Length: 543
Image (tube, rainbow, N blue to C red; front, top):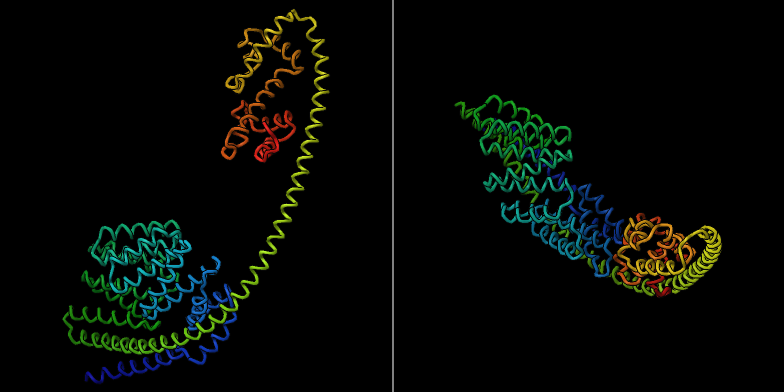
């Protein structure tokens, strides 16, 4: 009787193995095809070759490894930053392919090569991804302490919120498996916060790990809540395998809490999806749980039947994995042969590349020297034009000032004819004014005015204004501005001009706004503050 029950399942296992064999053989590398692919892709360079590799990477084709191999072997010290970035990406993705082939040694070597180049060229984003991938290798071997070390290194460099969520989840999962519940909850909670802020598609991973945390802590209500949330998040993404896995995990929790009806309900849901998608591992786990449920109910016959189904699927998976190991060894052998052919092509390409590179360097040096000479000539011509324009503007400004002074002098003579201020008093008052005007700490105060000046020289505004107009043919404001601009010129010649802006100097000499300072400076000197400053630095103007 048991043989009659086992026969259909055994037949199914054989048929599935044949289908799987045919499927895997379609992806087995062919030596002649590899040679043709290498010849086809050897003429591609730079981004075009990387785009081709990434295309085949998305298609899960072995051709991706050939393209990545050509890129990796093309590295030279003369490569520019963009090409080095492409080489780092090639190493990283090729390592990822070997990782999923369970060839951890080659994957690790490629990750280390990528890490060396990214550290050498300070590619922070790439370093973060590589550290995370190395952490995954150690996690695969259950070496969680070293895995956490690499995850933390990746986290310290990470700028991408999506990658940060996965890293925090991985850290939380590693801590959970290490029985460090407090730190596991901390990392998972941090990851969940970032998910909520960015509405990230990876949130189902964090929610499911958080559910496992609560299940392990025997907080079953919270565990159920987060399992449901993870299912709600995964369903819109059409990830049937993950949905079946999450439902299976939820059924185990209900079995653990002796809620048999709920456990059976979620097993049925999980098996329906698993059968449709042919997810054998999930089905095997579900049959194992069903066997335990029947055993708990005392139905040993049903328990045995479910256990047989579990065992047959496990054997089927094991046989497929054995075939996968054999096909993997064949693939690795073909990849190594392809690498030898790639190396030969790369040597030939590098010789051509160096010849072309030297020719370009000679041409570039010649062209650069010509451009520099031309630029210097243009610069000298432009500077001379600017200087002549400035001198012409200064000359015209001085003519205008002389004419205005003559007009102002005539008006002031009429204005002060009736003044009672004697010549001796004018001379005395003038001396006081001139002496005070030399005190820059006073005249560069923003609120310094005619009234303030009159107060400081013990006179009145009319007399002070008369003396200034008579002696200098200027009103008080023009008189004051000339002293302030003179102080600005002095500052420009003494200060470290690289540390002081036009605005800061304007404020230091008493102007309330930079625009007023600029217009006054140009009015007094005939040139703008910026041009004057360049002239001082270049030695054109001597102060």
